[in-house]
Image (cartoon, rainbow, N blue to C red; front, side):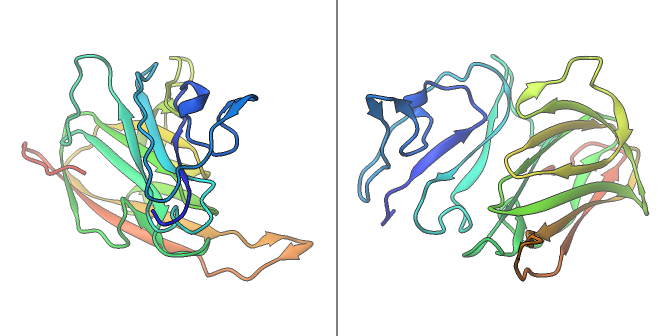
Length: 229
């Protein structure tokens, strides 16, 4: 990069020095600074647990976050392999300069249909890393939410008493992650994401774009071979 910046490992419990927040990570007598232009900082870690996490630019003076310096960070149990046919990532972010940049899902504004297999459990991982907006998510059959099971929050599995089936609708704030499982029947579904931009507070209102709706068509078929996402 041509500016000093840091990369933060969002939600992971790491030694503070490697946590990637310039001017904060480290100890009182050894605070971690930003990575200087033309330099590098190598982080070697052993994550303490499996879960859904993110990485992103932190304390940058420019617009590196809104221009795409972020991504998913999945930690699996020892011996487990990621299966793109049944484990699906939806990283809710933005692309462009400024806090009102157009919303993106997995780094793109528009998406073609997603094909899944029926009758098997699919894990849906949602992550929100936009600079400053509100997201609502629905998984719809027609106009009605389907039913999914909430299984994890912010990289931690939920206890059995909280892992419950519920209508597939979600309000997710900046920095949060949610994991659900869904076992679909054959048919056509819609994953809908509504982005509402921050308009400030009553004492300090500001102009913001109108809300943006993004739809991803999900086609569930009765035999194997789905592409996944």
